[in-house]
Length: 191
Image (cartoon, rainbow, N blue to C red; front, side, top):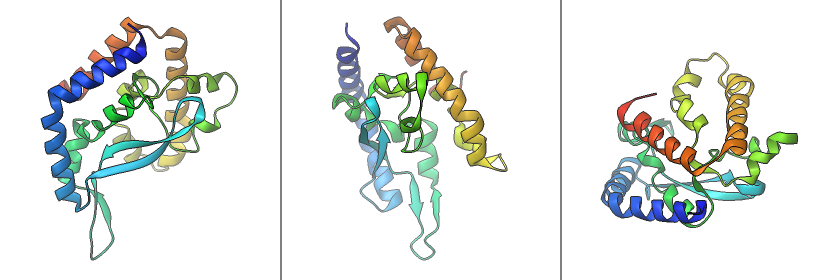
């Protein structure tokens, strides 16, 4: 089975099986954030081509102060990665794959040089070894005195190293193992 065919079958199966979860999550996100519940953001895709990634909105803005924060419902959606379920539509559109380097915002993957640019030959994925290792990245960064510096000097180079290792060692069986590991980490708090 080709990777693209697997991506389509897996996405359709997941969306059909869990459409009710996506629908409820979307309704909660919409009511909680007082928006349409969908968050679009430009990310860097395969070959450095930008695309719009779909997510459920988890950040709420207070109308009287303009303060932005992750709501309790948003925290729940993020904890179980439900906010990322709309990305299965990105997979169906061919912009993403189930397994591959997570797509980053402009200013990171599009600035890679040398051998590291090989990562851009792959479609970005819903999960990867790096996203499993850093599944609590926002909490790690909150503990840092200089979070952007820590991200740029420690986390991002480590993600690039792991994603480059995936580029050279990717396989169907490896992808299946990463999917199973992701399920374990997200739903059973495993490592």
